[in-house]
Length: 270
Image 1 (cartoon, helix red, strand yellow):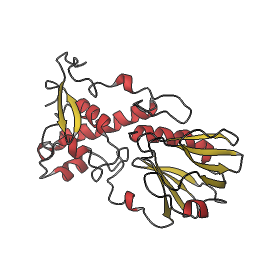
Image 2 (cartoon, one colour):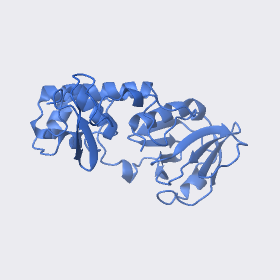
Image 3 (cartoon, helix red, strand yellow):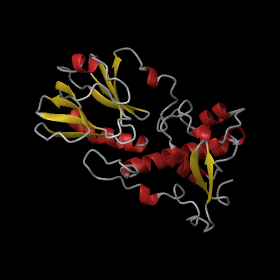
Image 4 (tube, helix red, strand yellow):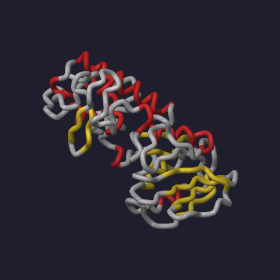
């Protein structure tokens, strides 16, 4: 599933083409994706100007004066801005046409993505109760330390809890814990404030670098311009079980934490 850097890469790629543009119409080629597509998408969006395209966690929001279209790419979804006469392919489920003749096309082979509606002044139920954004200033070591007190769950599980911080999925949690030198199996409540500050700094650095590099190409993800991400070739632990640690040369260890594969260095991460 695309993680935060992939979604942010998509947002940044789409923004110059969508922001300020007026929506001409909406074509739904099926009534649902993961969930039914609300009637407001067809009724409210045409005629509206896109004030902004935002990201919240792994969701993208197209803001208009009438409300916001809420999109999630799911396992295999992609969004492209295309000429209006571009032939329809299999799995091209939604077209949002623009006043300049182009269109925003949502392709989703597995249909695990979604297109929902958020009225003005409301927060969609899927976005309620989410933690802070990892790149925001209020996400830091003090915050992680306070939220972790009394927690016996593994620190990797804690870091991937969307109620603690959004968008730090399996790949980036593993890489951030390696950069911070923290064993992913360590109890969250037993990590010191100083080490949490290193972890918060690592999360920001890893995610920031991944965004610059275009995200991580895994399975279906490609950026809006059709180019793959380039961060995958720089991974230090994720997916490298049994290989040599690039820092100390010892074999990387492997375990399953919360039903997710986890790789770490038993020497460099304590």
